[in-house]
Image 1 (cartoon, rainbow, N blue to C red):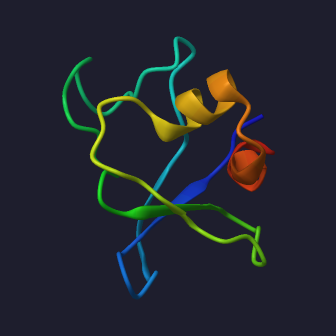
Image 2: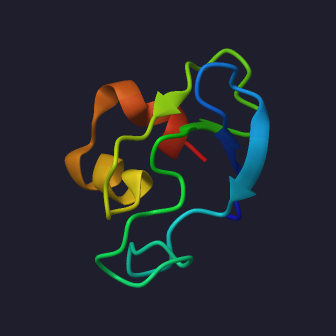
Image 3: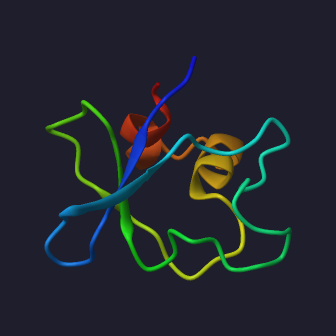
Length: 82
């Protein structure tokens, strides 16, 4: 199932972009492995999940959806529920 993840500006949470999520191998398709992901420093929200609190992405090189799925983090379920 294709999902749309909204990329939100820090603080205002205005939409600045979107993403389809990680590739089949769990990597971010927008950067080479080991590079900083483009959503680092922004917030993510699943399109259509109006009541869900946005997930603040720290500076990292792994897709946060891949990490949340691997760790099964309960607080991130709204982000990976699609």
